[in-house]
Length: 83
Image (cartoon, rainbow, N blue to C red):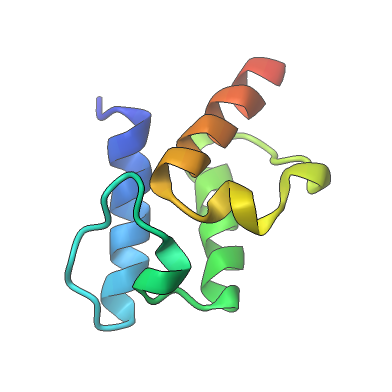
């Protein structure tokens, strides 16, 4: 099974590819600067919830928590432990 970082990177890469971006984002790359729109960020959040079978609390649905793969990975880790 892939690591959480690999799974998150794959989701972000697929979304970026739909925007014409073929580069795979690094763990610290800003996903909005890479090409994701605000609607993409909502879809990213939903995809992360589905991939990891978690529910992200509304209080954690902030741009900072979805800026980078590393930030999403930290959010997933905290959310999964709280469940």
